[in-house]
Image (spheres, rainbow, N blue to C red):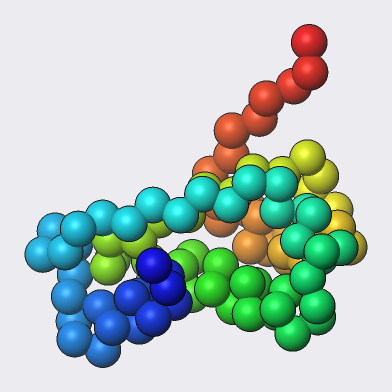
Length: 93
């Protein structure tokens, strides 16, 4: 599923949750994206994350991001955005 297209469709048509099925996006090892994608691809991913963060909940789209580092230079995510997210932290034992 193209998450950006689906979320834009829901926004355009005012299809709010619970009228629509909930979508859950899980992005594992987010800090590796910057190393493995072109700058253009990475920016597109960041745009989708921002869109979901800003509008997703209202339209039934949620995101879970898993990462090993919170450093902006590794993740591309601004610390102001990080403060607005829920976090689950799993440490090595």
